[in-house]
Length: 313
Image (cartoon, rainbow, N blue to C red; front, side, top):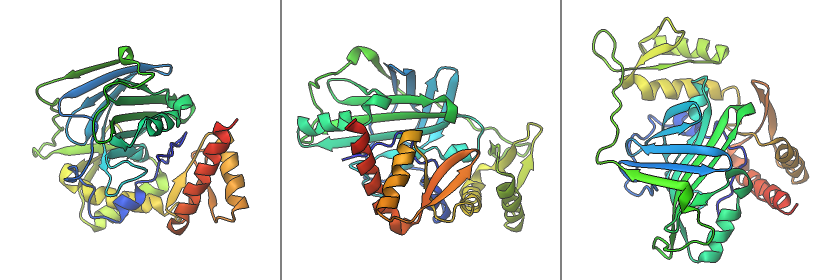
């Protein structure tokens, strides 16, 4: 069963990027996505209205309020609490000053309606799931103080088939359209005609170290008039590997997460009770819990305990 974090891990992708030559640019042959080419979903719940557009197999456009953001999802290599789709752990927040988007696009498979109901109960107070009778499920929540938004898109299956009726569905709150072609998004180019991408690198210490390594690796970059660094798109895998690696040195424990205040206190208490090693790390005024990879299962177990305590209130 999927355990839904109220505030999800921002840096969960560090190890993936720092330890691999590149982040996958296409889904794996076995990736299970909820959205289809050309699909656009507009969903409304108690937290507002959000629009999700399929731009390419891993690119999504998210629109809510005054925001209009594009993110590239990361396909999962292994099934994670039933999910084998793609996700964004807010990795762009390391680079950008905009909102950090924690997003998921995945199929989920259940044996019966009892499992479906249990899944929909998880995180419902925060995400306020809206869904159709045929199993398109949307979750949307915002945390302005953290500049964070959570957007989940699922396609449910029961016994390998899409459902035809789900109790509590709010189909009137979901509008789904399909376009014949995905929306193209041309990239800017430099004076030589090469595709470029820009980032607002934020951590001064990390930037200083990363720029030194970029020079050593002969990676071209330029600081433009807007204070953003321009890079060649072709160098992007190397750039991310270097920069995430440098930033990750701030938290050598590798795994890092933060939660709402009540859950944060309970997590620390539970970890202490179970004698699970962790370190408290502060980043931009936010308290983070960090832990070694060897303790990952224990921390996930602590999350389950805390979730049960909170839901039992």
